[in-house]
Length: 336
Image (tube, rainbow, N blue to C red):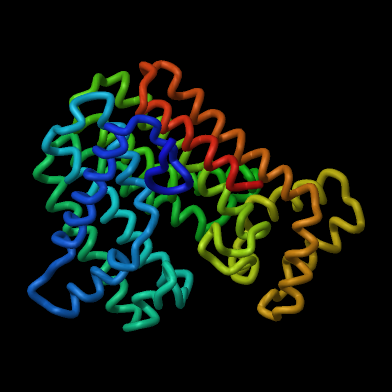
């Protein structure tokens, strides 16, 4: 058994492994080409995160989804480039909103230059993605436009917060589906669409992509608390320090509202306070790591990964399906 791509995705077939590796290399070359400009600063800023690397999860999913049709169809690799460019553009904008200083182990664009350069570079990446997708046909343009709407809607919903009377956990899941799941759904849909797969297959892979995308983000919510930072790529407690109420925190608040235990209330009050102090943050992390709210969040992430695997049942068995199923197991395992 060999491994290709992020999270230990197992590719059991040597021929599939070679073709996926070749496809990812072509995507990488396409990303470099798409981020070139006649203006040196634009090229430097646009290639900043491309050259910093990344999991390339979305392009990998495009390539695997294309295995259910003609994997060598001319639109497959360009569609993978489109999905990754769109993802990169959202990272530039996210770093501005989060006032991030580091991304993928290098200074963020807003930290290295400034917010104006970062937001305009993100816009540049969106424009390059739009140029490429326009060459793939009106169906691809529609898929990209609808996903972009969901991305923006999810970000606004996160900024706004739950409406009065809305379940905070349901709101969080809706935000995650919009901000993360929607673009990963596009990866599954685009790969299948460009390969000429049937409409039923396209819908299955889009559904799979959304579910595995939500599972991946919920696993990240857990890792922000439970890990030492090597797996998530972030300093543990980053979301806590920034006051972001991720799933473990929301599960704790749910328990406080339902059971009202004094120890739970005390931990929730600590989490609601100022965690910019390293000592208070360490105390908050220790409290959550030992609390059953973290196990409930783990359960939620695994449930979405299981649902993603179940969504693949209509597809024929084969190496590509096995790799997609293995990805479900890998995402679930990240929460341990």
